[in-house]
Amino acid sequence: MLIEFRTANCLSFKDMAEFSMLASNDKTNGDNNTFLVNNRRILKSAAVYGANGSGKTNFVQAIDFMRNLVLEEAPIRNCAYKLDRTMKDEPTFFEIIFMKDNIRYRYGFEIDRKSVLSEWLFYVPTTREASLFIREKQNITIGRSFREGRILSDSIKKDKLFLSFVAQLNGASITQSIIEWFEDMSVMSGLDSDLSNTTDMLLEEGKSGKKRKKQVLDILNRFDAQIEDIAIEERYFVPIAIPADLEISDQARAFIASVNALFEKEGGGKKMPPRVIIYRKTYEDGKESGIEEFDLRQQESDGTKKLFALAGSLVQSLETGKTIVVDELESKLHPLVTKEIVKLFNSKISNKKNAQLIFTTHDTNLLQGNHFRRDQIWFTEKDKYGSSHLYSLLEYKPRKDASFQKDYINGRYGAIPYIGDFNSL
Image (cartoon, rainbow, N blue to C red; front, side):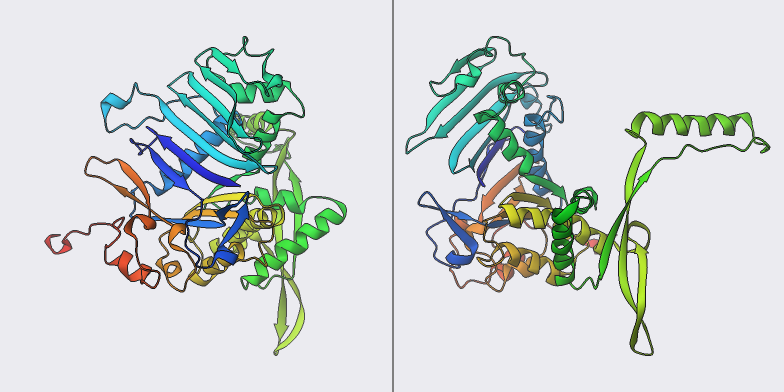
């Protein structure tokens, strides 16, 4: 589970931004919205509010940026704050605190445009934090308990994270366990309906595949999707054949050849995104008459596609206790659906493995009805220089019975747009 995340000089965050899933001393909804780990209360969910362009998406992207660097899914590159020219040569800072196999880790690094300037990994084996390694450019100090890194510290490249390097060269190890934690954390955009995670789940064979399909159907139909069944058809690219007797121009032939060559190069074995088929009941004179199939990508609404895209991550997270970070969770979804997704996580019944949901949103309906504790509500706001600031509702010390929705809309907590006079237009 994620406990804290910090970043500085990253995207729109010039100064240090600190986010925490540590619960406060507030007792409100403690049984459902929090869980106990090593005598500390951890939050199951958190929502980040703010005006358009205030930094909500950049908060999610900063987490994803760090994740991609650790997993080596992206090269080290510049993401420094651009609205202050003095910051372009300053390091970008990342640090994350999390639990893996009941052990607390603190890992972070500083980078510039092309290299790692510093890197550190600490853990808490019993009660006190201890160093596993500390890096300053190419100089690495190895802790007593970090044997797996000793023979490798002299061969690290300046543009490679030591954590990732050690994990690649060691099988079952501390670093490999940490890499798995980053792999398990899902970072998603609610604006894009990427179906791949859910389709990959449904393509699993045997009992596992059947179980996953039932779980996905249960999730979808809990949100009133009215789906009887789902089928996944794997598809493969078939090169475009030109009949010998077909008269077409040389330019057309060259274009078709280039398309075929592109699929050969990028298709990875000529495999294409699978076709997702949704089955629904049909009726005649008010009576059930059969089943009709629909192509999810071609014939279903954006909302249904969004639900399908989310379903796989929701199932995996709730089943295994993983962390999901979603930008614009409510996009394309009815407010009641968004509310139900949050309730899945804020529940000791449906969330027995203590999965976490962190998301950005504009849905102020969630600020009423005691869905969130005060420590679960966060805001982003830009100052007059364009720098984003991240802060918790706790900083305003509102009463427990305060109307969070009303006070937020009225600007009491900031993080709202300043609307100008449109009459002049």
